[in-house]
Length: 209
Image 1 (spheres, rainbow, N blue to C red):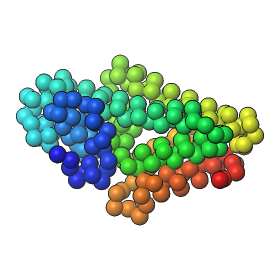
Image 2 (image 1 turned 90 degrees about the vertical axis):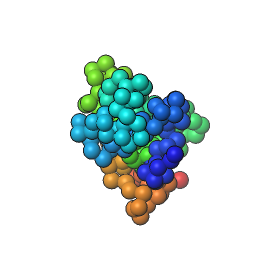
Image 3 (image 1 turned 180 degrees about the vertical axis):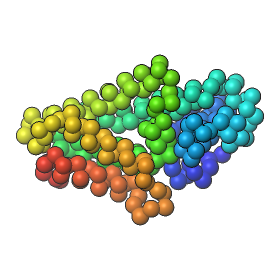
């Protein structure tokens, strides 16, 4: 059953590949619990209760609470990486690719703000091994965006003196959408994506379409 939170957040579709259904319910419940209470304040009993299951049933699918967070983080960061890699590999010049990357990345963080808050702000709760894996996905996302910015600077389309620093600024701008976005707010995810794409093109001195 899709909850009201999933209808407004769009997170239900994120977990389509998680099976069986009981495991998917637990992931959805964990996302909501971690977003509302924080990882450390959430218990496995809280998660199981939200999923309509017993605490014992949770351990059939996930050995620990941290394993649930790792599953959530992996799915979210893999999606973020795909967004950037697809934009980097798309046709068109650097300006078009940068606008597409930022528009899609910011829009995803708005549409999936609950999931995004968890994957972006609970990283330190991961085990060392799991953190290393997620950090690698984040570095690859960074590299894809940095490549677009470097292409634009080399082609004279962007005025960027510090490509790594600008990459960090753009990613931080988009990620922060998850912190403030509300489905009841004045802007839709699509409007946020368009706004941020325009802002970033201004930031790098690109001619806007």
